[in-house]
Image (spheres, helix red, strand yellow):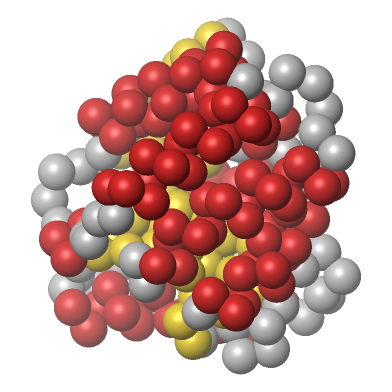
Length: 194
């Protein structure tokens, strides 16, 4: 795995936008089903800040993206962050959907464990890639980093199927948030071997 740079931004945004193309959580950010171009714009803006903060990684074959960081070493870029949020709210999602998302994210952040951890925000594999080695490379990289530094890994998902996959790799559910009858966020922790 290698850290993504600004020149990797188009590739990173493209992989994320195609991997999340039928994702109801991403779609809920928009008033109507977004075009691929709008979805790509969203991920380009989100990843611009994350790349600047050294939080985005590409697999060696450039087919997988992992976005994560150590919460104790988390840097911030307040001006970039404010610009990106405003651009997303005013130009892509609209105020109603955007503010609802920000409120939901604040609720989720309040439920995360307070101890130092690696926060695993996004994981995506190019949909055209059928090589499981890409997934294993991302998994092995973050797990090895976790073991080496004796720090747990946190992840979240609204999908029961994805939760079961995480649990197969040793994650446990430590909490969940029910926003509506049809929308639950599962909060997961991996501390295997710690």
